[in-house]
Image 1 (cartoon, helix red, strand yellow):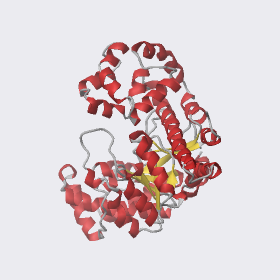
Image 2: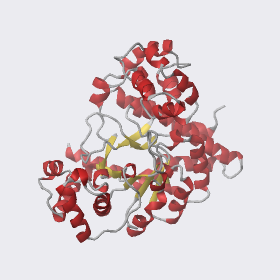
Image 3: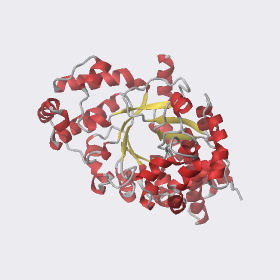
Image 4: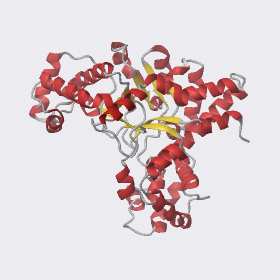
Length: 429
């Protein structure tokens, strides 16, 4: 039986703070068939952990290999084992809500292909997200510096300026020269090129984003210009074989410059923390949010958005948000990684941290159908978390609705200059 709270959460537009959505032309011209759409998000990692081979998963994802039935049957046993994980739940939501499947079977998948064909028409990507998913807008990290207007929805699809490569100590000379006209041969050149990127794209960006935790530790050390200059010279001499210590040194220096520029351009700095996508390659000691204390303390005027609740170090994330005024925490992707822990996280956060420091949702996916399903999943589990608070007597239903609105909209509007970004995009034309 729907409650007033559940109806409120269902009807309130969500601000989606994190996606990797492909462009309109990718969705229309090179998008997934129905089987790929169901299983191309994060669930292949669970399938592999459940025992499916990489060959079976690749076979299932390749329409040229065989019929839908044969492709699905290669992973069917593993699917039965993972269907109730957070990733599996998202697949079932896509099946039910997008493709009207009461159950995922070869027959139902074949029948749903016609729906897939209709969804992949021009404009349907925007409709899925704005109308079906009821999103206010989406913030997209497509791993590049450019934050140019998206013609399919200029004030709806907002983009992050990527800083991951710099944090990894990478110096892409050719691309930087193409973007800024500066051939980087020295540290002042690199600083000038970074300034140029922000001058060019900063006004139209919604945030700066770095997920360098996939390649290095989140621990930051302040580096002098002299130290960074020596490391840069070594990296430029042989980028493919530069020592890790030099990559870390230049990466720390560049990370700090990116934070300083984000302050100058009034942009939050988003950081991947915690769990890795995929499987079999996660060194848990370097992904902890607690590693960030040095840079959080060094730049109190910055706005750091720590993503994915630092899972599995959730309690560290509560402590960081409680201690540092310049920290916001994002539940993006977390609902799918571990919905029960995320529900518990929301409840713990309410009673430990000022409630203006938490964002409810980001799908962290590539196709609009995945974002739609993850939005449903987030609403459902957020409702469970707040309903539990009401049932346990900690909140009234009115207070729970006030918190829901904060987590879904108000906190994001306070942290991100959404209207300023939209104005800059409109002025760009």
